[in-house]
View (tube, rainbow, N blue to C red):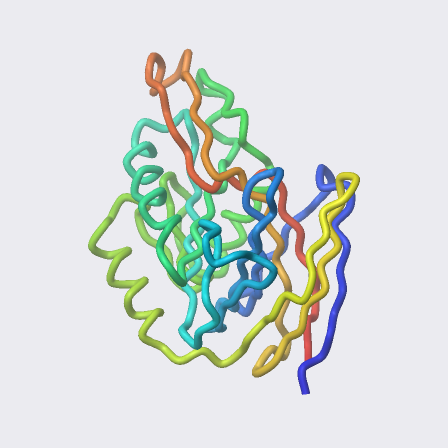
Length: 239
């Protein structure tokens, strides 16, 4: 039988991240409306509740797998805008969760990215260690299991299509999500193969446009999509 869980997100400025391949995600989009997405990186189903069919974040219940795209990027990197635009093209695709993590190691090279975080840099290094890969920007990690250059459109498309063709082996259903006084209380149920999973919750800004005044992109106006502003990991989500 599905098991109910409840978690409360507090003090989001102190959130830390962990790496694990078998992860379930909530995605809280924007700072005011809080629609919710989720996925299991080892091929979980996805659904939303408490949203009207006309809402842009509404997705019907279905049994397809979900592809999670984690782009490690920086506004100080001249190679990153193409990858940022490509990630933006995935933000409205069904069964895809696109996340933009801004790293901080470009900040000392002329432009401090306002969305950069040491925590996100650490997350990228954790992936590089687990996947035996180099650290670079723009780097895209797909479902915590493979990495590639974030602007390689054909390679990314092939990876996403392969995941979406798989059958999900776990599901997460959101029962309630109540934002109030700077906190979000979430009640949810998991089913299927969720053993040894962790729960990742991302607070995301859907779109951000910035005038870059220095560095490799100095003079440009850049748009970033689904920018992760805060991130929380809850260990051990089991049925």
